[in-house]
Every structure is written in structure tokens, then in C-alpha cells.
Amino acid sequence: MFRKSKSTGVGNKIEKSTRKTKNTPITLEGLRERVDNMDDAKIIEHQTHNNKLFVLIYVNTLIDLARVNEAVIEPLKRCTNEKISDCISVSEIIDISMLKEAEKKLMLGAVLIFDITENQLYAVNLKNPAGRGIETSETETILYGTKDSFTENLEQNMMLIRRRLPLTTLKSEKFTVGSQTETKVILMYIEGLTHPDFISIAREKIESINYDQILDSSQLAAFMEDHHHSMFPQFQQTDRPDVCAFSLGSGKVTILVDNTPFALNAPIGFFHLFQSPEDYINRWVVASFLRLLRYFSFILSLLMVPVYVALTTHHYQMIPLQILFVLVDTRSQLPLTPFWESVLMLLTLEVIKEASLRMPTKSGQMLGVIGGIVVGQASVEAGFASQVLIVIVGISAIASFLVPNYLITKASTLIQFIILVLASFLGIMGIFMGIIILFVHLNALTSLRQPYLAPVAPFYGKDWLDLFIRGPLHWMKIRPEALHPLQKWRYSRRR
Image (spheres, rainbow, N blue to C red):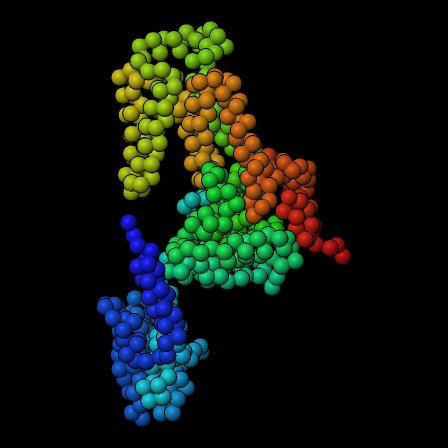
């Protein structure tokens, strides 16, 4: 059992030490202590042309070493001025007076220059711009349309959005979250178009985050969600800048997180998760058909296996006679009930799917195909599953992949198991009960405190033109009413 007095004493010591670090003046010894036992930290002493001593302190894995020589070391060696800062060929030079500020700048990719003669410290930002180039999105692939996607570089991601929306009204607010990671977060919105409530709520949620490590946009979303225990995402995660530009132009806010290629768009609703960037590239008739196909596939993936279990367990009299003969023939030698047979096959399918995702790309594809064929065929021959169920599970699995949002695909798997349990006990009545519970849950959800089932509940009739179908673009004269945009019309004023 821990003693309260000792714990409090340690806490007070840490607090005093932290406070002391924040208020400690700059000394060369203090700087050396901060980089002690850091193998990639360098402390180099030089002198100028007129014999003034200066010390460079930097972490070589965080800075651009070529620029250090070019912009700092060589100009300082040739320097004849009284002030060292006048010789550095970098536009931004910051004077630093406190040790904590110096430590922060050092770990963010700055070179510290300590003027021994003047006892003054300067910081020059020479952060290493290393990172991957702009590539095609692997999570939201489309045949036509733009091929660029976000990277882990925050400034580059902002550039990709601003290229598409060259507006001075496109505002960006910067935040820092995570006491250890100090992750930069950018909140973007179009001033005069996005409803102020969305901006203030998003700003409030970001500022209220009190956690030590924020490494990814999904972690940020977990702290910003209105309902933490729901399986449904309340932020749209995307790595496509065109999706973010469209969302901003519709009246949403976009949140960019440093060191992650996925942005967050909000508020969203359940029906936004079925929309794809390709919907606005295809002809409207084709796009409408594909969107309806996604809704149908989602329902199919949820209900196909539970309906099979309900009919074969409780309502076999509802099955047509010819199909019943086939089912009786395939199930006559099976030792498992329809429920356990379905659970076994669904769990096996999930194992194969997860294994193929975790394996290297080429091996994963081969594992998915061979594993599915071999396991399915072996299960039938061994008498653990019927051929009819193998077909139903296969169709259900393929249908689940038609939904563009990966997070909703994972949620549908859990919902399928819940409905399956209800179907095994209550039959068709259990399926209807599961659907009702699902709709009640969805109706209770919000995203940035906006209804999750809008524009169905509450009802916004004009938004239905881009809901279950994608109407012609020239018919979409107004922005979605569910987002309450300050600028309603998409058309500019006619001359």
C-alpha cells in the first residue's frame, strides 16, 4: 500500500523541478546538462574572424546538416561584426533567455548559438524537411480524379488544400496538444461560410485535450468525439485533399494533425460515410446507382447471415420447398447448429482478413485468396460447414467492402455478430429488434453536437438530392441545409 505523504513529496519535487527549469536563466553548463547522454546531440565550439567565441548546440537527426554549414558555421567564421546575429544568413533568428524555451527549440529542430562573449543565446530554425513525396492514396483509390494525397508534413498538407481553395477567407488556427509530443494541430474553415458554432465547438474540444501523447489524427478524434463508446466514427478520416476541399466548401471544418497523413472532417452524418469522391466524377445516373449499391451491400453484409440462421433455426417453414430440400441435404451430416456454424465461419473469415492485412502486400493477397479457398473447401469436406453457408458468408464479406469508409466496415462486423446472436434466440423478431436498437443508437449520436442521422432525422428535404442518389450538379444550387452554412447558395450572383 502506497503512503500518501511520500507520493505527495515526490510530486512536489517534480513540480518544483519543472518550475525551476522554466525559470532558469541560460548558461552553457545548463545547456550541456540538457543534452547529456544524447548520442545525436552535438556541442561544437568555434570562433569568428575577430576571435569571438561561440558554441553551436544541435541534434543532428532533427536538422538539415548541409544548411548548418552553409547558413551558420561558414558565415560566423568569416564574421567581423560585434553581434554574431548580424552575420547569420537566415531570415529568422530568435533571442532566447530561458532554459526551457531553449530546450523546446532544440528538440523542434533549431540550432542554438551561444555567444560566450555576450552571454547571449540565439535559435535558428533549420529543421530537417525529410519526408516522403506526394503519392497516390492507397485507402481511397479512384480511377479518375486527382492522384495526390496527404503526407506526414503538416505544411505540405495545408498547401494541397490551399491550392484547391485559393481564398483569403480560408482560415487556419494552430494548436499544440500532448505534453510530451507537443503535436501541432491545424483547424481550417472558411470564414463567412462555416457556421460559427462548428468552429467554436471544435476549438473548445481541441483546447480541452489534456493528454501526454497525441501521435495520430485518430487519437485526436477519440478525445473530440461526443460519444466515446460508439462503434461509429463521428469524424471522417481521409487522406485526400480534394475531399477536404469539398467538405470545407460545404461548410464543414477540417483538422490537420502533424506527422499523420489523415485529416479529420466534421460534422458528419451516417450517410456521409457512404459517399465517395468518385460520385462527383461519374455521370450522375451511374453515381446514383453505385451509391444505392453501397447502401444495399451494407444491409446485405449485416443481415444475410443472421437471416440464414433465423430461417434454418426458427422459421424453416418460410423457406421455399426446393431450397429447403437443398438445405436439408447439405445440413444432414453437420454436427454444429446453424448459429455455431455461422460464428465459426465468420470468425475464420475475420482471422484471414486481419492476417492478409498484416502480411506484406504480395503475401497478404496470396494468403487471402488461398486461405479463403482452402479453409472453405476443407470446412465443407470435413463436415463443419454447409456449402450454402460458405456462399452466404462469402457474399456477405464481399458486400462489406463496398462501403468506402474502412471504419464503418469494421463496425458492421460487430453489428453483424450482435444481430446474429439475437436471430439465434428470437428468429426474425430478433433481427427486427437489432435493427430498431441500431437506429435508436444512430439517432442518439452527434458529430460536433449535430444530429448523426441528418438530413433524415431531422428532415431536410433539399439535402436528399445528394443523399441516397447523387443528383445532377447543376441541380445542387444550395449547400447542405443540415450544415447551416452562412452562404446558402453555391452559384455566384448573376450579372
